[in-house]
Amino acid sequence: MRELFRRQPRFTVEPQGEDSPVVPDDLWVKCPRCRELTYSREFERELRVCPRCNHHFRLTAAQRIAMLTDPGSFVEWDAGLEAADPLGFAAGGESYPDKVATAKRKSGAREALITGSARLDGRPFALAVAEFGFMGASMGSVFGEKLVRAIERAIEQELPLVTVSSSGGARMQESPFSLMQMAKTTAALARLGEARLPHIAVLVDPCYGGVTASYTTVADVIIAEPGAMIGFAGPRVIEQITRQKLPEGFQTAEFLLEHGMIDLIAPRRTLRAKIATLLDHYALARRQPARRTAGAAASAQEAPDA
Amino acid sequence: MPETLSAWERVLLARNPARPHTQDYVADLISGFVELHGDRRFGDDPALLGGIGTFRGRAVVVVGHRKGSNTQENLTHNFGMPRPEGYRKALRLMQHAEKFGMPLIAFVDTPGAEPGIGSEERGQAVAIAENLLALASLRVPTVAVVIGEGGSGGALAISVADRILMLENAIYAVASPEACAAILWKDATKAPEAAATMRVTAADLYGFGIVDEVIPEPVPAHEQPTQTIQRVGDAIERHLSELEAMVQDGDAGLDALLAARYQKYRRIGRWVEETDPTRHPNGPVPSHTAD
Image (tube, rainbow over all chains, first blue to last red; front, side, top):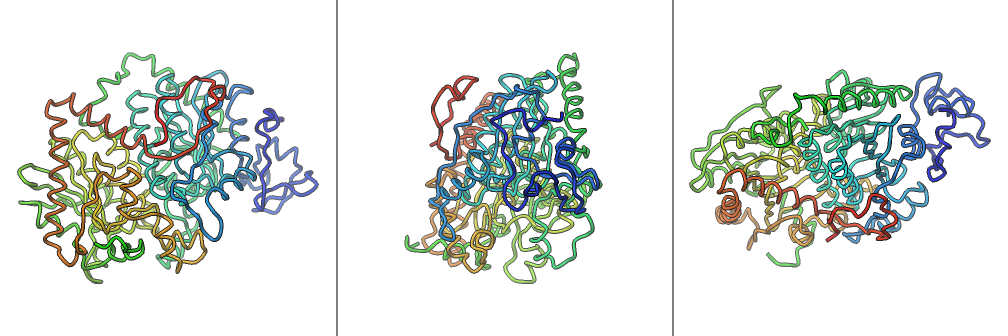
């Protein structure tokens, strides 16, 4: 696990900008929460979790993929999809294509979602990981299309689906198209559910808006990382509109667990094993006689349980 | 309406408090309407109206955002911004529609789902998501009409229908123009620019292939409410009749209806795709292309 984030040369993007936790000489990492310094090798060994205060640093999609898959097993799908500019959008002197170009340069990714097939200790599965460094992993047409193609391939190949999401929400620059990706991705998951294939959603910091209000929260199992901020409306918006002081720990993963909105919180170093265990249970269930067939499932009285 | 109205002028018309609201459409179009309250989980949300009644000879379920016509009413009905229990009431009524084979008619008119502490505690996001999931496979014909404001996920949660219709001066967007301006211009007073940039009008959405019909407003809806409501009723009836013809032969027809509904949303999106087949190790993708 030590060289986890260095294994795949295609995915060696370092975090950029203010969020970058690495101090200039790359030897020590300063935790933004407890201000403690950690030796960078220990930091990597701890999967970028502060060993002092358990603060989970944000990961790039590449790091996340490396963490959740067997080395060399990830085969990317639909890497060639890139944003169009359907509205001819520009704000503050910057066009949407300019913004996308900047995001590509800064993140090293081509869009805000990376999808593919992979193996987890030998178990095949479909994986979709949001890249927060690309325009806050906002969901536009490409995000939605890549996710739906991944779901359709998962159905064709009878693969379980794991999604790892962090997002600021729907992408403003494709307004109505972005909004409709919520409907499109969730509709595809209804089909995955009819095929009785599981969807395990991992919510990581931060996850808001249209992504929380669509494909992520209709998952069969919802896992969050400790301390992750998750919600529908952002805390500043709520504070401004309600003029109320937000309760302690509002919208943290722990708050959501207490309110019954997620299944469990998994510290990063347990996440991979937790997903593996769940995948085993669903794989076993697929061979059990009690399993309903897709045809029998299409009953009019079904509660939404996909 | 003159073609020259700006996007912002239409936003203001869509929000005009005198504009006919869901309860006005129900009063004029639905006979024997019985309002059904509550989500059977937590409470009854006055921002979301729902019930059963007869629409031009067929029993239907109606859901819609409930705005007020004055400040007092708006305070009572939370300005048409549902809380999770509103969406859960709508979900319960959608399932009711399916159980009894009643078509679903949805009137969309909300600034958005309520952002609030209680709404977050009770799962605003999951309440919306569960409705999107349920609407994707609801086995009855569904028609949604955007009559005023189509505000983001809070509007989408009752409007993922077989047909989406929009009044000429209604709007539909991923965020309010004010929120968009605050985020992208760092200045909420740039809302008029944001409205134009976000392409929020009925004509825009029709052009994008997202809405199926724009219902004309020869004069703004609030100046001729009765005529507007009848025009909306005629459009709903036309679309419902087409959908009902599809499902005449029972399950096979319903399967076809659901397949068509899936494709309607499946094809929405615009992107650029590099066509080098070597980049697709699993072979060609399913035959969906950008339109």
